[in-house]
Structure formats: C-alpha cells, structure tokens
Image 1 (cartoon, one colour):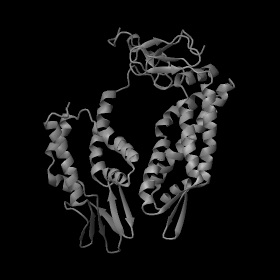
Image 2 (image 1 turned 90 degrees about the vertical axis):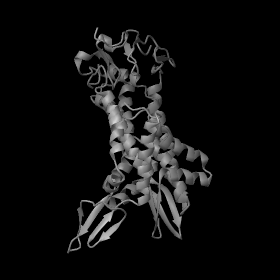
Image 3 (image 1 turned 60 degrees about the horizontal axis):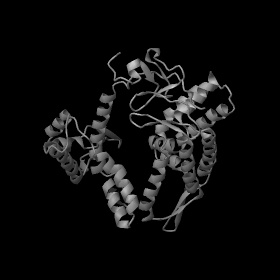
Image 4 (image 1 turned 30 degrees about the horizontal axis):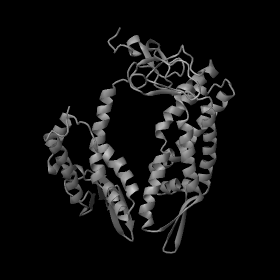
Length: 205
Length: 197
C-alpha cells in the first residue's frame, strides 16, 4: 500500500478533489474528469532514480574531464573541453554568456543530481535528515533551468554548420554527455512528485 | 460555498500545494509539508500569461527576421537566420534535423491563438521611419584621446561614419523584413484569421 485511502488529492490540472485509494505496485491514478495522471505507484521507483542519478554523476564527470570535440582546419587542430568553452568566452569578455552556457548544461544538472542523491539516500534508509524539505523544494525549483536535452540538440545542429568549414572529431566527452543526458532524464522522469513528497513527510514526521 | 465549481478542492477551501501536491486548507497560507505558499488558484495567472505571450510574440518577429548568428571566415561575414538554417539543412539532405528545428522554433510558436487588440493598434500606428529610428543598435563617438563614448542613435541606417561618430545599425533589408512581418500580422488580424481580445 503506497497511498493510503484516507489521503485525498486534487488534480493539478483541473482541481477536482479525488480520493486516490489504495494503489498497488505499477498502478497509476488518473483524474476521472480530465485524465491527468496524478501519481504512478512503484515500489522501487525511488531506488531506480537513485541508480540512474549515480550513473549520470559518473558520466557528467567524464564529460567534463575529456575532450568534447576537436576541429581540424588548414592543418591546425583545436581541442575543446566542456569547461574550456566557458573559459574561452570569459576570456573574450563575455562573462554573462559564459555563465549562460555552463549554467544550464553543467551547473544546474550537477546541482540537481547532488540534490537527488542527498534526498534519496536518507529516504531509502528512513533517516531523519534536516535538509530533506529544502532539498526537495530546490530540486523542483531548479528543474526548468536544466537544458541538457536542448544542449544535445544544439550541438548536433551546430556540427552541421561547422562541418562545412572544418573537420570535426567527436571526443570521449561527447559520448559521455550523450549517456549522461539519457541517465539524467531517466532519473528525473522516474521521480513521482506525490510519492517523493510523501516519502519525505514519512521521514521528517 | 465560495463560488468555485462544485467538486473542486477550491470549493471546499482546500488548496493543492504547487510544490508537493498536498491538499490542505488554504487558510493555513503555508503548506505544512513543504512550506510553500498556498493559493486556491495561481495568482494573476491570466494577466501573467497574456503579458508573456505578447512579449514573446513581439520578440519573435526580430528573432526570425534578423540574423541569429554571424559567421566570419577570412574576413567575410555571413549572416544566418533560423529559417536560413532550415533551408541549409534541407540542401545538405538532413531532412529530419531540418524538420525538428522548423517545428521547434517556427511552427510551434507561430500558432498564436490570439493577440491583444491594443497591441495591434500600436503596431498599426508605427510608420516605416519609426522602425528606422528604433532599430539602430548603438552609436559611438570617439573623442580626442581616441576613447569611444556611446551617444543616442540618430535616425539613419547601416554603418554610418561621419566625422568622429560611428553608428551601428541594421541593413535596409533587415528592417524591410521586420516591417513586412508587422504588416503581415496586421493583415492577418484584418482578414479575421487571427482573433484579438
């Protein structure tokens, strides 16, 4: 039993008051009026998210440590790493642009992953941790500012443009970032908001 | 009863927390689970939405008409627009990527349901020369020590160099494009294709 029958939920789309009832593993509750999915009950959903998040951490580390891509033109080769893109912009006097580039593609996702880990580890161990509530709020406040998928698409698009001017070699970091994007998305889409906040409440009460 | 539709949480004075989805009396003001502020409805939601849509629609015009990127190679600068990028990708034979960009950046946004009447009236009042004045980006004046100072832009076009004053602006073609898009929008409203409110 994951959501007790006594708890009432309101549909976030149409505000209909709904008694969710008892849900078994794999069952979902949808709003009877507008069909919006209220919650999906999974026994191991949070554990799976933690696993994806840890994998994403490793891949994000790799993505920052190795060359992202190399450009070859007229006998000159230039190797680019993810952090260096921002450093180069900063040296060009474009500090705002540097923050705008590195924030949503590395900074915010890294902070979100850290938040997922510090939330889910105490929840799994039924530990009472003082940071659970602020960390939970931070996670959902940050999520609109993560642009991991946008960056992946952006790189693919600009590759087409650059490929006409120079030879482009994709580095380890590019593939690591691609893997990170998949793991990151899996970790966050597996976090059911209603279930997670109930788990936080169970730990802090 | 407070006038909200029957069966909703709001009708019973209950608010669904926007952060953690807990249902509690709105009279508490703060969610007892996560501490977020409680509202029966998102405050000023329609006004905010309208304001953002109008802003987005206006910014959408220069975003598509003006170049999004300038590539400089061997001293030759090439301007690219979003649509230009799509056309380039089609020429390269990359139809799927071209389709993704076109749908994400142009099609999705262009389906604006309605525009505000008074904004259209404002656009109607604009004359060509208003645009010429507005779209000049910057003007610099170089003093005796060779230091550049920014001064208010004048009413002319293109890069202008007069005495010790340099003015950066847009090319005539870019301004014409913006003008055409505004006329197109007004035309759609007049033809009844785009409702106003």
